[in-house]
Length: 113
Image 1 (cartoon, rainbow, N blue to C red):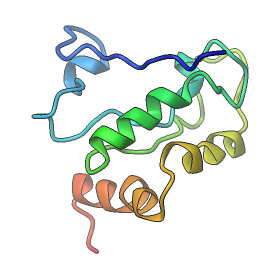
Image 2: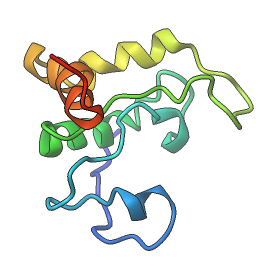
Image 3: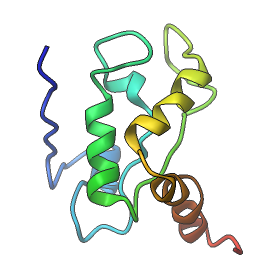
Image 4: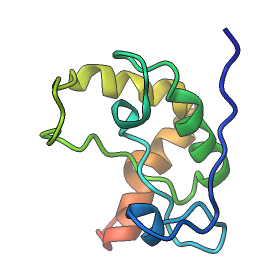
């Protein structure tokens, strides 16, 4: 099966994308930790990984990771271990992990180093 090609609207008008559109001039990109919300497949959501991978590749210095714990409004609560396992797939290097999980949130929230 061919991998889907991610595509994004640069200027969405409503929803969270209105606050954090996929545009280079934005300070932070949306989180990469909600594959369960866009996937049409069960965990580990292989069809969602290309989208998160593209976010990390194009907005690596601004992308954030989040699991949306405790997973509100879902019929089936995902295994957080499955969500964590995706990090290696969407951020394939140690440097990408560091940016996604530590450096970017530190800058966004103003935490001390």
